[in-house]
Image 1: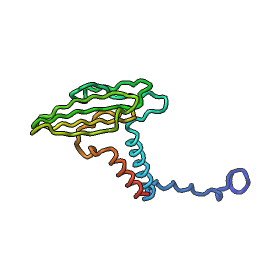
Image 2: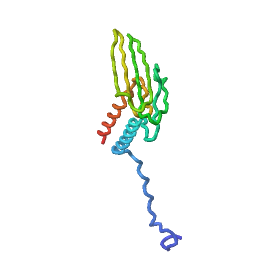
Image 3: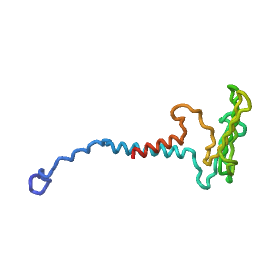
Length: 169
């Protein structure tokens, strides 16, 4: 039982166990890589937030007729032949009062190009008509009130984020 007679392990052949691995530390390049991945994921989600339809999927649009608020416009599935969502907004300002009528629907094509018309029909009265077409599901919802730092248009956020990503790389 011992020594060098071959019956047991030789005490001289034992070595100390290897030291435990050092704790992982974030190196600047590792942190940068994580930041780039997070930024990329954020930008990808912003770019896809409109919910583009895949070929073969049915388009969905908000639909209403002469609604006085966007809350009265409900999402609905479009016919298979419909390819765009159309949104009309009529705003009439009379002194300090503003009236709005919204009409939203599905359509096989955009009736005309996107347009914005304004005119005044007398002192203190201003009218505006805005028509927009888009081709993603539920893309024709009116934007939320412009409040806070996230109220910037999505296109600007996407461009700023891509610019930042380019600088980081």
